[in-house]
Length: 476
Ligand code: UDP
Image (cartoon, rainbow, N blue to C red; front, side, top):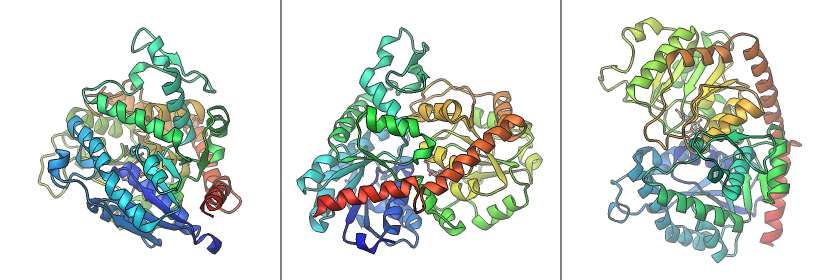
């Protein structure tokens, strides 16, 4: 524990979405655990989520006011992307982030931190930091592979050279012959103008920034870590997997929102299962499905014959809602075999339990990395953002993933449906048989390397030291 580091003070400013806030809090905890003073800046309604995840760590939380409904056009209290699921609200939330600039700068002026770690969705943050003579570091919460793909697609625009949406192209200047189609890139939904402008500005601001913190560890993707730094010329530090700062059950259970299930009840259920016999199914903090797709998932899971925990973002148990989206008699038939969590699940706690043997995921990078840490083969079901890249990483690069075959970026609107037979087959492939065994062995090997990376002498631990040295030499 480096007391010698105490004088550095780092500000963390996450985008207002759970999938951005949670890894950013974990990152702040990594800094705090290494003796660095850490402050997280956020808006009032995100404080409960952050304080739960901070737990006992010595981290300060500073709030800045979220702009009023008159300024943003959003309903009162809509301060987190999970409440802004329509295209219109997403756009408004992205716009509202610009209005956070003045309040953030005011806090920077008051506290004089030595560094600002701000999410990619705050393109203005590089200039804000510069105003106070401090470096801005970008945190997307991503690993090197998706960062490299994003950079190469942006730079070479291979999608402009194909004649149809389905024609595959190889991503230029990227090791490993990665093929994608235009359907898997962010498409032009109605709201895209603002979104693409935001991404453009984010890119410019990133290039001007002090560097990027990757949520990854070197051994997971050495080729892409080197490529990002040496070929694409970006300054970056890998400090992850940041979720590994949650060591005991209490920390894992408290991470994120309050769970929709009692953690002890959940653990008791898992305890009653054989090792590697449960598949965990969760599509991140934002995705919800139409009823017809939920029904297919239910039937696919049942037909796979595996025990499962399925996180469904729909209604809540307390609401006396008719479960029309479940097949007739489903709940009775799966009693004891399947657990449905309606709302927020303590994901890391569940993934890390020895009873869990596979993970059906939408391939958000946090989930990908949490699955890797838990040593799990994964069924990949990407939907939007950079999830198609992450899915490729699992299936083609580290070879611990089986795809359900979706081909189209949904931009959070309409979507491709996946039939029960496909779900059943993919679940079986990651859970039972030789292929599953081989993937699980590879994943466990990676999980072991992840844990080694974050302890003294490990690659992420050491990269942290170089970042702190860099910051210290600038601060004095
Ligand atoms: N998460 C969780 N419980 C849930 C849903 C999500 O703990 O019910 C956590 C998950 O562990 C991960 C984050 O929320 O750390 C989601 O991030 P990810 O990048 O996987 O997906 P996103 O939500 O950004 O699409």
